[in-house]
Image: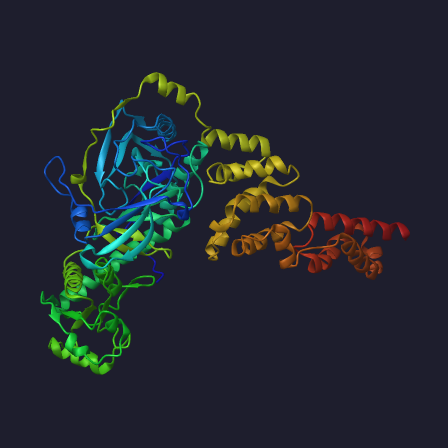
Length: 635
């Protein structure tokens, strides 16, 4: 799937939205704690149904209208640490002042202009992630900027908002209630800052750089939560001949570049697919047909589990198109399946059949039912009529889009860097004022107090590293802008005999190289790095072994560094090391007498073949030099 793409030529534009949980004592609109709970500790639950409502302009948001079609039931779990505000049985309290101060601090670090008054708004969200059917959000600052090698990136807005409820289970209820989705209320209401950049990002690499800078600025405050799920990135991506697409829920920062590349590839592939379909004269027939009789004697368990109910449509001229790969692990058929899945239905098509227990004979009968030619593709869904018809109508709509243009939509990030359909892009109609929360004035005294206590800037930190640790300009800049800068300082404070250059290159270059090898470095914790340098400072192994130990620990993070050293075979008994050096030196006495002190270098090569990675080269050099001196003294 690797393709060389000129991102400037295709007009790539991207912008980031970073959502970071704040480490406040209480939630944004109540006094509940911001700690997550074991879901088994839930003390009560309740059920809700959500419907799309009109904005103050009398319009219904298109994303909300789409969600309403699925007729879901939402189940919520509450705890002794959640209250009636999360249940939407009590009005919200005033905005959390601690959260406001932190959001203003982040805004000033991003060169932004805070607003004079903070007004809370409601943003319609009826996917069940908020019990009241909307999310509360408040604009805090605008018009900031970040610098990158490719040029400045504007930071359009910073908002303070409440985090959503956490999805914990998905099931199916029988009867008219349709699909049921489970949520936990412990996360609902935790304060978030949402930072949105302008679409100034022009390459995948720049997107990663911007995300890293934003992450580091947030962490530099010391007032944000850490760990999986506490920071989420959304990426808005478009190309000149394509459409704007929002990809939500990227939790791995290092995946951002791949997601941008794969979305560009998806849009380019869909443009090529559109051209092929139009050249063929493809068309979509809006006729859903009951084809259950074709599968009366089927052995397919998929169809049997659906009670033998099968409905289908014919896509004229689409033969072979559903198998077109548009992203790693994703075909055009996967795009259509996303729409059917929204209605709880699985999709099968003649580009992939026979399969799933469906025979070639049944495929032939299926095609005959639609008078389908070799150029056509028949799509079927095994489900009861109402569910199947809704799913197939969505599939037909998406197939029509494939012949016209790439649709603007919201997609969810997948672990491999691809994405799947979620819903249409929301519009302005989903926003309206929150009348239960009073505004907050941002006065000059408050801003002055925050300004005088801001954490140090990149440039100040860089200058400090150059002076204190003797780093060159490149390395000082690299670690000053890296998310691991605080870890660097911690290691250098603990182990003063360790090379600052080595620590910087480990936390930056080595980690990057491991990512390129496909190693999941997100599994490494700060303590892993601290422990590695503790043992390195004690000469337990050579610095060349650091990448191997990190790689091993990334695969087995539960293992200690001591155990990892043993497993890799790096443990070295210094008495045995000294004995080995003595044996090698004694075997080369004539060579030493002839070369004198110059014999140390060649002997080092021999010794290092036996001990590389086990003992630091400086230690070995010192021991070899001492043995050589002894031989020369003896004559």
